[in-house]
Every structure is written in structure tokens, then in C-alpha cells.
Amino acid sequence: GTTEPAGPRWSRGWTSEENRHGDLLNKYLYLSGKCDMRSIEVTIQHLITNGFNPGAQKDPYRGFLYTSFQERATKISHGNVGKLAKEYGASDLQRICAKIA
Image (cartoon, rainbow, N blue to C red; front, side, top):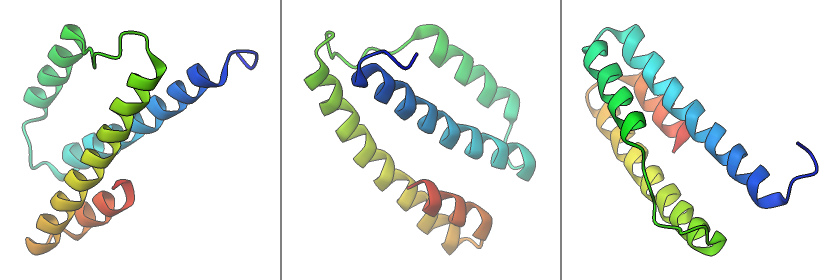
């Protein structure tokens, strides 16, 4: 809702943005036909089933610290994948990685 504190609203917005990145990469992999999508989907199901605890302990500062490091790590990772994609002639993947990095 619109009356909630800014923190939960921001967290949901950030989470939804990250989800869009994953959806885009998932669609690329599916449409390119270069991966065993069943294995990828099974892995995603296991990751979601097992959950993840970043150790924030309901402390907003720890939560922001985690997201800050995660954002930087993701930027570096997507940038590196984009460079490799360009090197191997996968220009579509390179553009996707550059966009989400």
C-alpha cells in the first residue's frame, strides 16, 4: 500500500527490478536454445524452495549493506559476462548484460 514506510516500498521495488533482470536473462536463454532449460528451471525451484537469508536480522542498515554489495557484485558479474559475450560474437547477450549491469 501507499501508507507503508519507505523502507518496505523501496525493498519491493528493488526486488521487482532484480526479478526483471532474471526474467530477461531467462527469456534470452530460452529463446536462444543454447541451454538445458529444464535444468535451469529445476535449479531455480531448488533455490526458491531452500530460501536465502542475507543475515540482516531485521536491521535495515544490514539490509542496505547487503543490497549495496550485491548490486556492485551483480554489476561486475553482468559486465564480465557481457565482455565475454562480445568476444564470442553474442551481441544480443552483450547488449542485455550492458543494459542490466
